[in-house]
Amino acid sequence: MTKQAPWTGVPRLAVLWTLALLSGVAQAAYDLNFQAPASKLARDVYDMHIWMMWVCLAIFVIVFSAMFYSIIKHRKSLGGTPATFHENTQIEILWTVIPFIILVIMVWPVTVTLLNMRDSSNPDLTIKATGYQWKWGYDYLKGEGEGIKFMSVLSTPQEQIHNLAPKGPNYLLEVDNHLVVPVNKKVRILTTANDVIHAWYVPSLAVKQDAVPGFIRDAWFKADREGIFRGQCAELCGKDHGYMPIVVEVVSQEKYAAWVGEQKKKMAASSEEPGKVWALADLVKRGEGVYGQNCVACHQANGKGIPSVFPALDGSKIATGNKAEHIKMVVNGKPGTAMAAFGKQLSDTDLAAVIVYERNSWGNKTGEAIQPSEIKAAR
Ligand SMILES: [Cu+2]
Image (cartoon, rainbow, N blue to C red; front, side, top):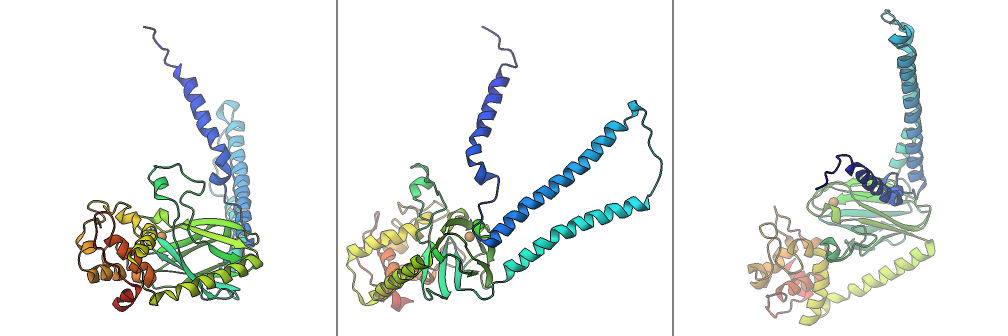
């Protein structure tokens, strides 16, 4: 048996480390620096960040140069002898005044930018962003598109999350409905929340604002180029905190007008629904989609829930028993638990569909349809 020298492993380890480090180079643009700014304010923040890095670097170089120069030049072996003086008014004034001046120089642009960030006056468009566990709701309150409202839910497939499929390029940073806004328009975002504290954070637009239940906070941005900008909830808000991304789609004025027209048409179409009587199969089909967006994270696709954390719906008393109890649970939620009140988030039709889906899936076979009008009556 040949005995391996203890150091033969070292070069291999070095190669592995180098490879590991190099593999990050391609992504370095994302990993090490801020995202590319998409508004003047974001550019101000970005430039300030870079500028301050240079200031820090300059201070670092000056301080360490002086230190190493002194250590080397005045070392004992060259015959250096320590000075014995105490207190030097001149130096004490200097090392107080110089950092003070540096700080003032740094604080000035920061203050200007911060004041600018807070100035959300005269917006072209006002949108309310409401944080829910775990999705965002948007209401276009004022400006072109007034009256549009929708939920924006994570669209990354469950298979990717559970490592059953390869992860897509925008893994956990993609949603079904983008927040669409026009380019070069001042957009004011009002943030609030329905359950716990969330935060609306889009780095490229330099917006990071807490969304606090019972309070309205605001922020603004004016994107100066078209594109899709992605962000995330930035406040630890529970189990699926990492699963409620924000996607802002900045489009031209013409495209925005077309989008507004489309949304208005969609809303008009869905508002005709309440009188409609739905067949069981149609409800189940629609309900499957609603379930996939709102319920699947906790109760799971197979309806089995997560034992001792989230109850199973397959064979549960609620989902197979009295339908009035089931409707009440979904509409009002269960206080003190993670079960949200979906009455505030979903339409009568979507509520009816998802409840019917739950009552007629997996092993549940109640075979009864529930109409949107019954949800309306139960609210
Ligand atoms: Cu959140």
